[in-house]
Length: 183
Image (tube, rainbow, N blue to C red; front, side, top):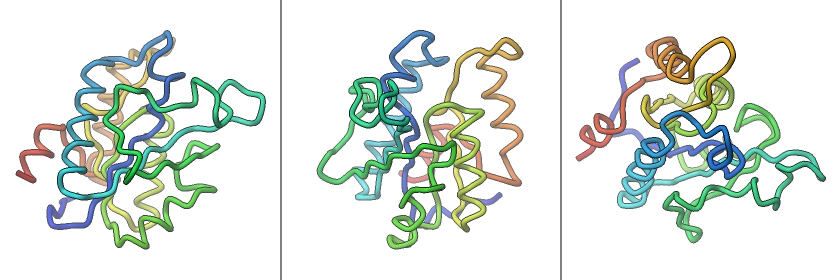
């Protein structure tokens, strides 16, 4: 999938919440993940492009219920409360049951740069859902993560998804390549 660098892009930061990013087990490569995402956030802020923070919200009374401590976005990310948009979801897709698709279409966004947690769940689903909505996904290969599972290491899950999604579903590139293409 060829990417058009002149497109109108938005950054989707998915599920980078305290409960998934700051409690054990920590996501694979946590510090690099945070650094890469912050570089992308800074780039989008500097170029006055939209940044959407997507949070998973569980049902009332659950640890991930909206407003609970672990539901909050990790404080290490360079959020700008004045201009960034926060979207709460209760499904794997950040588009299903939310206003995200409508907001992207209103802003004439045709490419979604996708980062965050967890690779095999909400990140994968965001790539597939964006494509189905006519929004070209750009998956940042070194800015999404997960934890080890009994079947596969987190590194293998990430590598597998980067390989499988690249081409038919998303344009996959690393943080440095993305930023270099726009400097």
